Length: 302
Length: 321
Image (cartoon, rainbow over all chains, first blue to last red; front, side, top):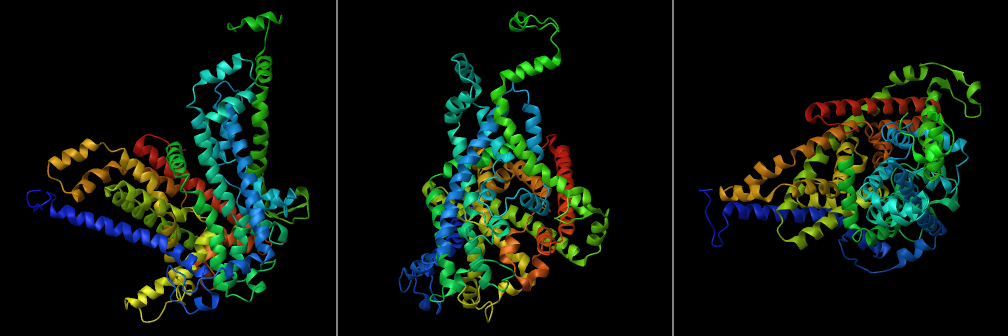
């Protein structure tokens, strides 16, 4: 623009200001996103009685691991950790196998049932029965108070199947044909030819499944609240958070805060928040490129 | 039928019916059937049987009785629902929070995506992006815990900053104020999902041809003018598609955030339709009434989805369903 005065480096002043605004805004966003996590981490590592005085920002003032020691002494946390890990592993593996298997059959143009199965599946994305009919169903299937309720209902999601299918569609059919000439049956083709080539899509879906499993708490709340041996980390954290708020409605099962009077509820809350968050923190930066790919792929398809 | 293959001709059955050809192909494709039928049954059980459960809303449902022993009551529960003030309150809360979420959930990620796109140092950009995805991956339980800590009256950072800046004289009890609840939910959603939602816009921005920017630069356009005249129009179609999809989901915002962030003090503002079904249906054992709420919710969201799709078709001649 003619009215722009040019600086020594040749950039117009308005662009300089624009740059400053951009960087300042981004730094603010980053701080707002990150600060709460660092603050929680600092408090979880700070002496409980000292924390009550306040003023802790992102560094602990009186460093201690006592908060973690104390909560790990509570058996509910260890059981929760075990069940959370188990459901994440089992749920992810089963979910991957079943959605990729179904996706493979749907990618086969020659498959007679293709049209029916894919319509049948696609409809589930638009209509859902709702919470209460589902609850009654789980009850009728005698799945209340079982581990199965964590992995079975979420086994096949239409969205995941369609994402994997669109990936398989991109694999040349000639590969399947040559395997067939070598005498492979359809299952062998799926297992030996398709699965290895679908790895990038599977990595994306695995991440979504694993995060979903790790993060879910509502199924524990609804179906397994009375089962101490089937509790999950998220549910334990939920109980602690809700108990320090005003409504402790009708939670069955013991609560960590009641069990441990030695450290303040806030320290319990912060330490368990960190325990629940750390696994995700460790995993997600490495899988970033996969989920970004999956996100854009899914968006294009839907 | 002309197309009799060599193989079928060999099996000396002159008139092959359609059905028998279907079954011979079926036999050939037995593995494909074996690999899909179990999941068809699975989908039937977990996605279609609950729809059968909708009959509960028209019965005086007692869990102990079988289907044929239930008393049928017609639309009684729906009548009761539409005469219940709490229902309209829940509907208002649902719509208010989804509209607020829609507005904030669109504008803020678009702004952040544009800002990120203007960053020239790739390393800095990547670090910022990675950090911005983090809240998306933590559960709402964790998020709710963190948010209530940040907003708390004792040592919550939000209150400390506001008091420090002399904007308020004493800490606000955010979590106990009903009239602030909608804003808290919206802000929490923005905090959690903004970074993640930029992915799609950044992908769209990356698809804009660099020659457009070069031409604008030659014409002497400033960076801000380039954003206004090239970047924004370049992602317009993406924005429209996403808005229409969101309209389809307007009523189905669920209850997770409201359940975790809410409490009895703010119930009048936190109770969404799903939470209403949970509290008044499941919580009180009134399964039929709760199912009626679920049906209302599902039916309205399907209508919205088709309406949104219809609008979308008109605009773009394409269908998203």
